[in-house]
Amino acid sequence: MKLRQILSAAIISLTMMSATAFSQTKVIAHRGFWKCDGSAQNSIASLRKAAEAKVYGSEFDVQLTSDGVAIVNHDGSINGLVICKTPFSQLKDISLSNGEKISTLEEYLIEGKKHKKLKLILEIKSHPTKEMETQVTKEVVDLVKKHKMKKQVEYISFSPYICQELHRITPKSKIASLASEYDPDMVKNELKVSGVDYQYGLLKKNPNWLSQCRKNKLSVNVWTVNNPKDIEEYIKMGVDFITTDEPLKALELSK
Ligand code: MG
Image 1 (tube, rainbow, N blue to C red):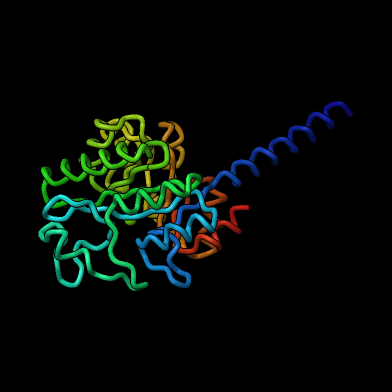
Image 2 (image 1 turned 90 degrees about the vertical axis):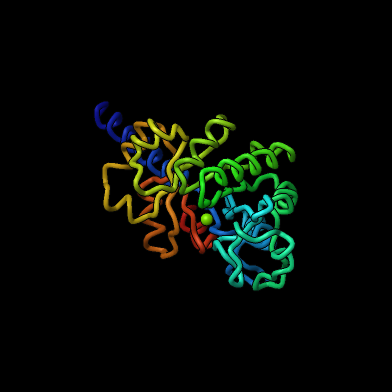
């Protein structure tokens, strides 16, 4: 009888532990929450909508203009103008699909600061030269420091060099590598950052990477998971974060 009681207690606590593990997956809105009225990818509205949706974080992309202004945009060019070769004065009046002008990083941070519970998942895009990558990383970290937002901002980048630079100049910040060519051991040993942010199929192709991440104490984020079945699968897998264009659906499934 006693053994039976012990066994059922163990089963109950194991079930609770796994339920807790599943509920720990947090949702990040990819390029903000933009699939709703009045919003657009990487717009200030998408940041506000992500805060209203009460997701863990809102992701956005940052790159530098030719005269060193950090702006928020995904593609390397807008209306045929290559951002890193174009001064800000020629880009500032370009409208997003919701009518907003393109934002500077500073404008984005000022808005983000109003939503204290929302983490800003700041992707620094790869730039053509090491010099530009050094410059954009410094500019971004300086702006975050200026607005006293170190705890609210978490960094991601595809560029191994930018990850290393971030670790060098802001070692206590959360930094995750997006680079698919870096397995979890390489991320830990060579980049020395705190997490990985993998395209979700990569974890399926490399089933041992999740445990490798756990062993290395790396946080695990997957992108861009939009299909409800996939979202459920990664929640069950126990990843820490899901980056998605469907934040409401992911929130519902994560509960
Ligand atoms: Mg991005």
